[in-house]
Length: 438
Image (cartoon, rainbow, N blue to C red):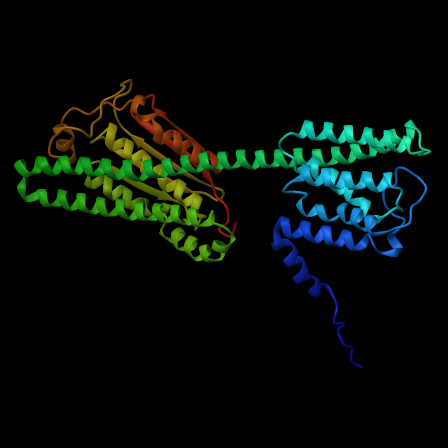
């Protein structure tokens, strides 16, 4: 036995729902107004609606039809012009009640117009509420003079109902405004965080490579006069450092482009996955820390590098943070303790990566920059044992370490940096690791 699938089902509702969502506010309000107008003439709904006067019923006619339509069709503008919509609907409702026509489902339009005014009226809200209240008082007075059996308590109860509908719309408006403000503040916070992240990335990339190029250029200038046959090596080092800087800047620009595409809308989501994966592949990783060590050595900085434990693939943010720790520490060593022995140690644990960078130097000093001048070039060459540049806490506490500490803290890690009791400076970072699939 075979069963035929019914032709109706949820799939048939998708197209109308999609059309409803894509139609916009004007389309939705127009459909609502037309539907209410049609239902107002449905016999089964003739006794449902607002009835205030309880006057002797008058036979229906053309005027009653016009007044019924006037209570429903103006709802097409309930969001664009809520006050005008309420004025027309309320006037039609008042005339319909004063003339004693039978109850109509179209009178529900008064409730919808009141709610819309409370939810969408922006300017002159107090004046609109005052005008509506005055109109209701006038209607109650007219109905009473026309012989309505209702008393003050009945009119007050109906007034409270109308006020409650207005307040419901007002509460929706307040919540909508609060949500818009929350989204605005969240966007500002996200923008500030993104600017800070970009500033950190630019600082890490530019400062390290430019510092290395300055030291290498000074060394090459010194070698031109003292050892011309070795000057070419210094120029090659400058060229290699520049290429590495360009490569990292291209990576950073690619990340910024991907971020901008993500902000353009949902259409860019599908196309960004491959781009983000490509950027992740080009991102600096801890495995490339040996390139940093080699670059520092070419700049004349004596660096020892050791690595313990089994290196495992980590997420991009962990790899990049660990790479930046080594990069910033070596940059500071070349800037503030040029020529001083530096030891880089990386330990891969089961739950964390520990990085330690120690630079020897005299303690208690606050500040000379060893990367400038002929002395720095002399030490970069290694051919002279000039007096070491003091290595103190002053220059080390700048933007680089502060941004690096924030980067590590975002990964639930910790970074400590400061002078050592026996002299020199130490940077120690602990970064939690996590499986790559996370």
